[in-house]
Length: 290
Image 1 (cartoon, rainbow, N blue to C red):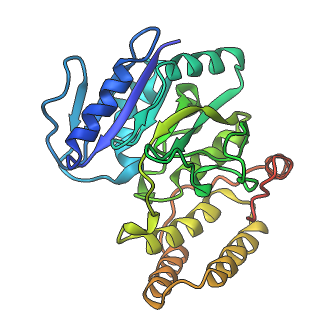
Image 2: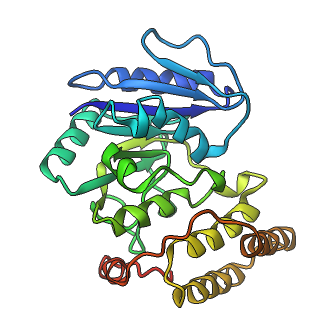
């Protein structure tokens, strides 16, 4: 099984990027071909053999990763699976690539593998980094309904069948959009606690656009993928959860602005999942209203 890796960067973490590339190069088995996408920056000084794509502007996380996919041919078809890794992460083990090959080879219906993210100093895995509702035990691997954007592997046949990441999202929820489309097409998603990306503990709200884009993309996600009767239920649940969490006044103002934007702006093509996929998500422990 041929593996590639896509890493997007804004050029502001050169030391961390080099360490990540070194950890990819140390992987056992056949070499993993790497493409680094510069988001509005020129990438230079990388190890020999690492390909680069310099974009004239920042296309956002899904847009940049889509460019990286296409660097491996249409839909990434030059390889069998692609690793997507944050540029300030680090593969802890040298057998992660081999574990990916083994997982995809043993389960032809497996489309996506989500890695465990752990803090390099404490070893802690944040609850939000376990892609399931029952997240108290991050060391338990399981079948899941979404995945972590900066620490995963995707079989390229998934992109061939269901299309790329939603570039218009720019930031937030693009993984769930792809995951729902993949599940609707019959693919499986696994969370693997033994595949680890070391990554410093951070708060997603550090991004200035966080509250607006989380709300906007949540609405877009529902409008694009859910059967019509579930759209208001899903959005109503998330509205209540947001209020219960008692965000600051500025954060709440940005959130409602994004929510309104999600309702009034184009969200891309609508392809509602089948009801049997809704039931499948429910049986996996995450009905698509939560």
